[in-house]
Amino acid sequence: MTYYLGIDIGGTAIKYGIGNPGEELRLASSIPTPQTGLKEFLHVTRKLIHELMDQNPDIAGIGIATPGTIDRKSGMLLGVNPNLRWWIRKSPLDIVPDEFRKIAVCDNDANLMTLAEAQSTLGVVLGITVGTGIGSGLVLNGRIYHGSQGFALEAGHMCVQRDGLKCSCGLSGCLEAYSSVSAIRKAARQIDPKYASCGLDELLQDARRTPGLQTIIKRGRDFLSMGLANLAMLLDPDVIVIGGGAMEAGLYDIDQIAMTIAANTAKVNHHTAIQKAKTGNLAGVIGAILLAAQE
Ligand SMILES: [Zn+2]
Image (cartoon, rainbow, N blue to C red; front, side):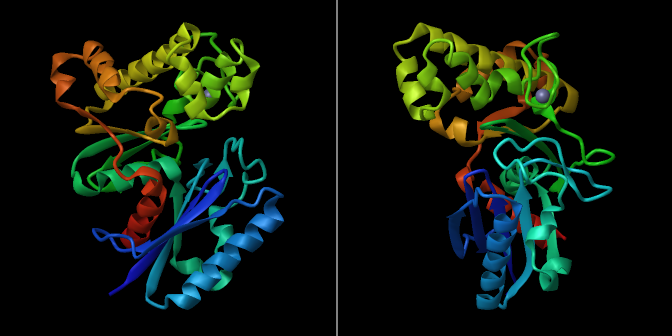
């Protein structure tokens, strides 16, 4: 039996797991993401992969999930990684020791979340992750759709408001500037400066008795739902899966999102199922294992 190693690079933790498509993970764990810069980051990740490969000689491939957009021509990470500022204009495969490089593949974490969620669904699956930013992916019959050069499905940077709020990408009025956790925090800071840094759980607790916070969250949910309604009409997906840490924390209600999508799409589009992601915080690891097995 062959197994695959999946690694999910995140701003605070590097999650990893060993598994096989269709089976429970044989191992799932994580280490904190080194915050001191590229050198330490590469040292820690290469050492981790080396140890795991030595201890598990039945591993046939390595998959890596990373935030950021990967240019399919150069293999380099582009865009902005606010939590890993030095992790741009690099190849994600740099974390793999040379001797294992030829069995390693990588992709964007939202693409791999969508792949993990699409495991049991043949057809068209659109995935959205709501966290610090907004990520998205599209899986067509079990394969990730990348567009012509790797820049497809930047749904977080669709313009939802002309001349709107400034986004971390440099554009204005992006979905991410209204519906991401950073956007909610930025707006909530006007009500109380503590919301710039307190936990999302605390913010959501306070929202129960603070109408101002409710308005900010409703605006975020409405923009997200409108963006998804437009994507539903454009792509006609079988399923829209919404995941990410903020959805797990309960920032947006899936039923309310589904209602707004239904109210803003044609009847023929109402077959699209709107559901919450099931793979939770292991989505990136599972997607990375599936990708490694595919390649
Ligand atoms: Zn943007």
